[in-house]
Length: 396
Image (cartoon, rainbow, N blue to C red; front, side, top):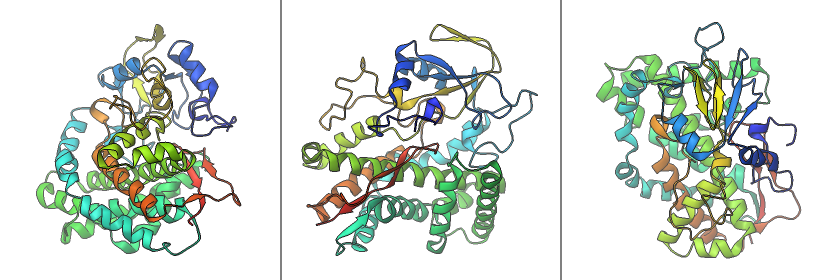
């Protein structure tokens, strides 16, 4: 893990924590220059912002900090996003405002709350597959499939396609792969989603993408629908899967915290909120291109530079969170696990709901569950999201 870029580095002895040198960078002033070629094609200076208030300022000012990635030539960065051209992640207002407005109502807290029975059924269905086993890998058998089924059913992706979309979404965020392999995977994602959009144009079905076609089909191009679909599939699967895996590991290691958190529904909701903070999945924000000279945390940053924001470091700020450690009974405290500003995660209510359902379901089904000493836990440390790669457990 020490060979990873600073912005992605984890503690070698406690991988759920950011690396000490990354936390030290924040203590040194809240901004540091880094090298991140995989997120800043074309070169140029790149800055990592670690101070929470400065992060909120950067993410809240799209006029100064643009999400449209541009190369030093001044041209657009092209297909730099894992979700392809036209993705919300790579747009600024007014284009971003128009497209996000079409999706906002689909992910309202009220609408997502109505999904609770479906998510509960999915969680129980997945658990039933290994209910009578003695051992399991909770990443492959639980943390991966539950959010995959939830987001696929929500969007209207055929069940026969889910394994392939899981495989492609994992490749899309793996920075260790050669550029050619990632480009080939992007082409596969674009092709699959293009075919799905074509089918939905003819028969919209009952999923979210079909609803968009029915209600806003004339306002949206096929390319925009493809980008939306890929973004929602990727964000709705990989991030939640990573969060579930890390959370299960932490709660296995801390049975007293688990007991407090799973006491009742209100306690679980409170605990999930601090898990989101403490186990922040994204290493950093997508790069912002600076549009005009600006000062960040007392450091001069030039027009054309790029800025990344470190969410895990900001969410471990000792001046803001006492103690910094996971505290299941903590009163709700603002955090940056879902970002900030106009690009705040659309799927935040769904992620919260899934976490509040799957964790109690798992530990109620397997009250004697424990880490399997015969095998080791492995971590995914070369990805744009941090997570547990394998989580072998003894179930009884």
